[in-house]
Length: 221
Image (cartoon, rainbow, N blue to C red):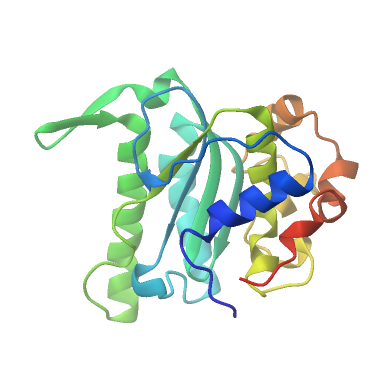
């Protein structure tokens, strides 16, 4: 599997914008710093680019934790889990920004939810695979997407991460991404599909046709 440098995303997204004539948007990659309502790309990877998912059941357990911690306090629009990374596109609203005490600090509910997701998952996996120490690369990172164009670009990018990483040839071959949710009729999904359809003006044709819309994603990194 080709390695994906953690900040290669800046180059990928910029190339996508240039090649399709979109207005270039400002991207800041940082640790979790969610202060405004809006759409965010939230992601993290395994420490030293090591695996965070070791078998199929690990992905399923992580998704259960997402339903528990993330879904009640945000609208998830896209997600992808690969052996070394997780990526979410989510809309954070006023509920997700409510302050919650964490020790002597006050942090937004959504930041605390992601902290708990990572912590509870890591503890379980460390016991399962008999490892010690951090599973994730420090804290998750967030990227505020200020325009609909940047959010839509990231929506399609997240669905093509398994292809970028060389795991599959087409998005629906990878079972652990929201692409499969969007092309199925399953009523219970992690994503708020209705919100995504309305916000991005999506339909099944342009979701299935994302390879033609964003061909520059098929690159080696």
